[in-house]
Image 1 (cartoon, rainbow, N blue to C red):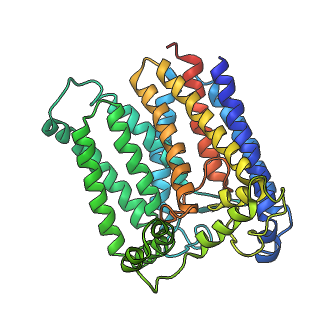
Image 2: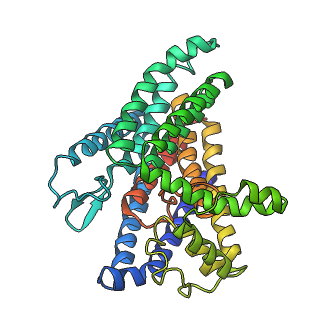
Image 3: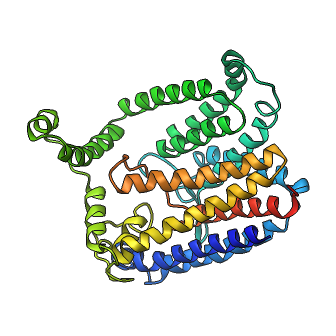
Length: 388
């Protein structure tokens, strides 16, 4: 029970920090760019946080033997239908941005079905892999590939719905990574993992080279990364390898300035400069840069420590569960949270191309917050009612 209680409070603390930063980082955007009241985004995020914590607590009291599969399939099918249905909705209910529809407007709030589908997809993998790879004896690579074929079709359908129709390659990278690693945890061989990663890499390259937008983002990423890498090389070699006339990544440049300005202890809560029009979305995708500027390197370390504690606690729960689908689901939740954090952090730091993935619990966004609360609530339910 101590692990369960600590997990609940750790998640709640991250949620509180996210609400705090939603106010500190969004005030300029709220008033100057959107002409809303000063507390507009703060109130929305606070409302989502309260609802999310209540949902997390409520789900922790649910008996998984009766409700886990029902909730899992609900989170798989309903968001999938909503994603398809969005493209038939009028602009007043689902406005398009950059050629993609990602939100459904429901009165005073917007819903992003994909955030909930990620939890449903993780459940599906845990439920299905526990019935195939875990249940089978050791097989050769050919047999593993045959077993993997249905998963590839499911993932292709997901890639079409999310990567193409919603123009969101970052989420596909995230879900593909979760699929590949869960295969290993469920008993898949290293050879199968290598083949899947190789295939995913080839598909990713194809997706990039066929999109001018993604090619530009790749160039923006390399323009920053080469400056860091080539400082380690002799000048002649660096100059020979350097590609000139590349555009500079606006987001990563200002994120770097924010981290530099923050130093060790930060400028202080509410005193950062990056939010003053330099990065209008600093409270969402670039929230780590905002935290680094206002709380400094130490504040950023505190956030990463909290995430590390959260991940360790979930792994402990997964380790004591005897039912494979339950333990695999817990591992999947760890992968969703951990990969989202790492991909976002590396994007902010210029190591990866910026993918637009939210930081769990910290980034502004009600759908993302509620989906993560549902995931933690289900993990708490498994820990509470399942004897390991």
